[in-house]
Image (cartoon, rainbow, N blue to C red; front, side, top):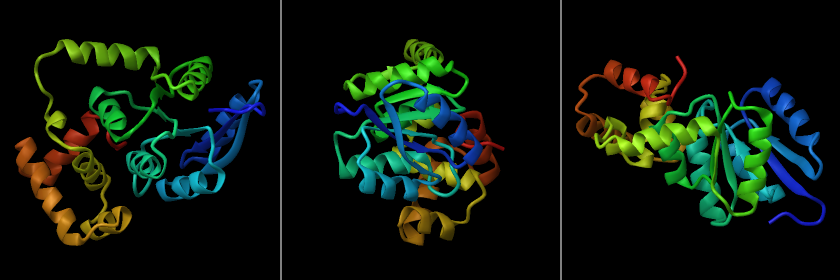
Length: 215
């Protein structure tokens, strides 16, 4: 909950120009203070521990461990943390994975700045926030009785898939997620088994069409 000094914000994005632009937008709002920035999941967690912001605004698609991992780690440290995802992608599987990891809201970068500002105020009040396009995507998804392929995967399996599709090796993924190489290999096998896909090329196509990675 914000105090009398306003809402303190941790801004997480791996593009400095993007952070700079949105910092200006946020700090133009009365009562908003960007008290820290981070460019990776690990840096986001460290900044959260150091600064205890009222809300974390973060992108999901980052090099190395993604925003999903940052959400999971921050929420493990503080179950009351307010985390607003701010992403280029708003596909239903990605949005659902973010909320499953512990996100408080989800706004796409194509939304008007006012939507981001409104969402920040909502999540700080303890409400769930969605930009209009994300709300429409989730509504359409809820009306479709067909389960998508990605719905068969758990949060950690989705994160493994994203990193595999981004071209990382098993060893790099293991280091990013603090897992053993054997565990990552097991997850890799499970992802193929659950999706029914046989090759890594097919996994990459799935990740791209689901908005898990930019290629």
